[in-house]
Image: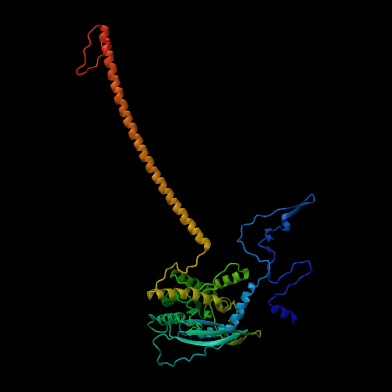
Length: 468
């Protein structure tokens, strides 16, 4: 009794071995975090060795890890999940599931089996010739379920009449209208002045029942999922899988997944988060490997030859156990839908599907908003973007400066070339004039030496020689 009492305490007591030892706070992280001791590299026994009585230590180079702040004492915010747990238990949960499929596929039976309660009573079979409806009906039933001090208000939306008529054109439209009407009702509640009592009636999961034909999806199956996969979390299941052999189930699943991939249909996949343990990752992989789930539903208890009582269906050749994973995928379906990913279904409905619908709805109403307003930004990403813009601006300025410099160099070169050509031209003119004068002087020199008189040049007043 004492042990259970202390286990329920918030563990705020301090234990101390001696007066000299430092206090230990329960819930406090150890001083060794991510292979470090007091902020220095950790030394393992394998990294130390003795050589001549001297202990040498080697520090292994490890890849850099994100720095995490380690507190020196226990602050207490690690107890916040317990606070959320208490609040959730006090308020309870609300979950809305929709079941869609043709009549006779065991939708009501599967819901009763999933939640182990009599939500649906056996349906009465209409008499021959009785008048039947011509359109798909939408029926919902709610029930408060309690398990281990946890209260759940379960609402199941049924769609009798889907796929039961000769003309099934637009048979999915009443279902789409119902889902959108629930979105509109929630949006209207959000726009109220007083939002203290929000009622969430949005559909969190749609279990679609596929006939066990063993071939592939029918056109109505493909069109239904194409119309709804952006508005609700689709979970396809193969109904009455006990009518197929194991090989037929495997082949049928492969064909269904191929059709879903070909038509671009998004079905709900269990998300994977960082820092999850191996057991959780393995469970998620096992769940994903079972999609679409081949299920068998039964809320009746039968007795096995060994005396055990199980939920199942008795046949002349044996008993199909609903809760036996080797017989069907019911356990994996319940695990994903209820035990492990119910909150993920609610979050994806609220954060993705509803937000997309809300955005389109407000844009259609003419409500526009600047995308940069209230936009969450990561400082590191923003700094990187600013650095890129600055580098691009510098590169542009450098390119412009290079262009201006080249233009000025070209202009200077052209001017220098022009000046050089002018100098060459003047040099040739002066050289020609000097050559001409040299020839004239040589001619006069020859005349003087030969004693012939010098004939003055026409129109020239210059005189050469001594009688100048």
